[in-house]
Image 1 (cartoon, rainbow, N blue to C red):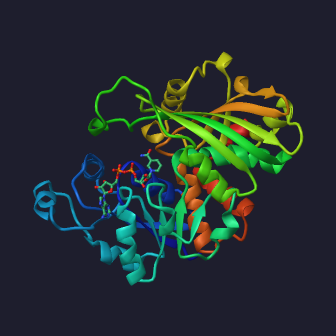
Image 2: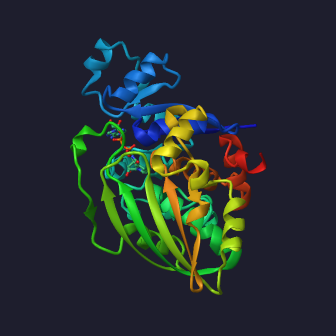
Length: 344
Ligand SMILES: NC(=O)c1ccc[n+]([C@@H]2O[C@H](COP(=O)([O-])OP(=O)(O)OC[C@H]3O[C@@H](n4cnc5c(N)ncnc54)[C@H](O)[C@@H]3O)[C@@H](O)[C@H]2O)c1
């Protein structure tokens, strides 16, 4: 089997996890990663024995890399030339600049949520609009919150049909170790409607969505509450049945000890997941309630790892590896071990 050659540009929070996720795909090969500074992630890569080859987007800090004994395999151009697809996880806005290099070598690329939608041909989600990404050159992934939100809304939509959602996002303000965000103890409200609701409508235009976002001074996961209104009444049993079958949704319960985001982070570490990552969103069974004809529920979004599966679906789409969402997502899920808990 000819493997798809993949490179990752930007070896930060998302890039490290994308690289690890690609390595798990039996039909893909990670050729290397690109960065430009000896960050902690790059130092850890060196201490781990350089499992991934490192290429530089800029040689400004070459001397520092040399001093630290971090081997460099070449320039960004060297890696891009060899790849079929680049996963660009550089800081928001830098991807649009890197795109020039992808265009120069006529390569496919998948950008993350910090870029403008205009960077790509299609704003992409592996479940909700996989087919629109087929054989395109550039995709942009939804942000972490939108990725998880769409998983749950699409799941209900496919099961019973949804026409309207209203959401509240309780958003973690920083990733662990983000000192540049400050030491804070305050909540902050964004102007409504939140971009996640607008993004959902871009990808699922048949659904009317709105929402409010509240920043919170925590780092391990966002929580979103969703009120979803169906074409007809949705009851709790129908919703739970649909959610329970979804390989990227883990049903949890307060009575079992899942009290909030921190319980999930701890559980992921107890599972032995690298860095305490979770690809799946968690949905509290005890949060599902009926309100008139609508259904309300709460989900946890592990922001650092949640977009990895849908980004890998994106590779499958741009390369035309599978012709539809069901086939593509089931391959990605199999290689990432998603949904194992459903049959246990
Ligand atoms: N952190 C999250 O929770 C999260 C979740 C979902 C999506 N995203 C999105 O993912 C993207 C990356 O975010 P992140 O949090 O991983 O950022 P990050 O700052 O942790 O990592 C970015 C890395 O890119 C490197 N870099 C800078 N310029 C570069 C260039 N020209 N080429 C290659 N690498 C370069 C930096 O040195 C850094 O190591 C953004 O679009 C962001 O909005 C982030």
